[in-house]
Image (cartoon, one colour):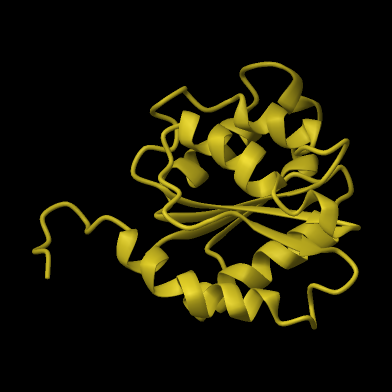
Length: 171
């Protein structure tokens, strides 16, 4: 199973990225194969034709499972994440990809943001999101047990939702 993390935080090496990597490790028992720290793609996000952006899009599109993470800005996902996701074809860009929408925020009153805002965008791009989105408090996510609880509740469903490789027999 190929697993990716996409972190759309305007700060490189952010808590958003760290949290997404922790979610992947909790769900799969391993580090992600691909990590896209979107802000590192720089001004290539502002147009079309950037080789680095195209490579990142291809890596995410060819993943089986992707955790797409954003801080909560003005009650929604970040603009830099939207710039990256705009590079994917509508309905097809994330076809056959299982996605986990993840958002971090400073207060629990944005707890539904991942489910209500980020998840529909991922579905619009063709991803399947069989589990609820995950919201984490950015000040406590490493220790509050929410990641482990999510993995315990939804990990098996997410792993079993990954399509079997072409030509393999289904169990």
